[in-house]
Length: 159
Image 1 (tube, rainbow, N blue to C red):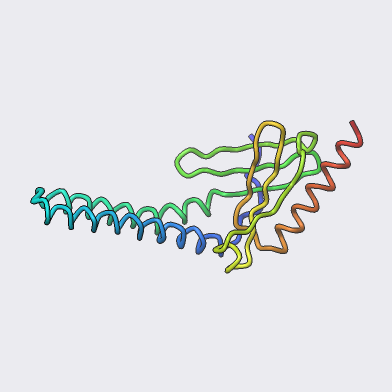
Image 2 (cartoon, rainbow, N blue to C red):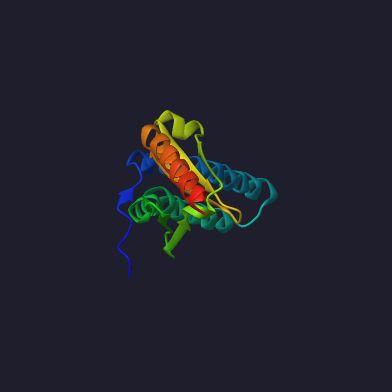
């Protein structure tokens, strides 16, 4: 069996993932509050709000503190001359080898949270799908995009 890919994503990626989960958790909290208010006005059993609140609290703890840390620990990538090796997953760890001859184009993207931390996602497009390497420092993402593009072009010329 192959060794794990050597490169990890930026530690700031952990902060971004946590912020994303906090935003999602806040929206879910608003829903829980809305159900509590509706329970009061429509005389629904109060245990419904209590259960939803407990589920929200437990879910928020798991998604904000545990899952991003595990995700950061597992996410790895490595670019070789003839292939790109990407490992990801939380409960099921997936390992993808993308041959350079299959790469059609490479993009970098940056949303508002990634931009705040000077991070970017590298997207590698093949005919079948798009593979992503998230939360890389901007300089690393640019270097990686250019490197993959150059290697894919060279490999394409060799065929």
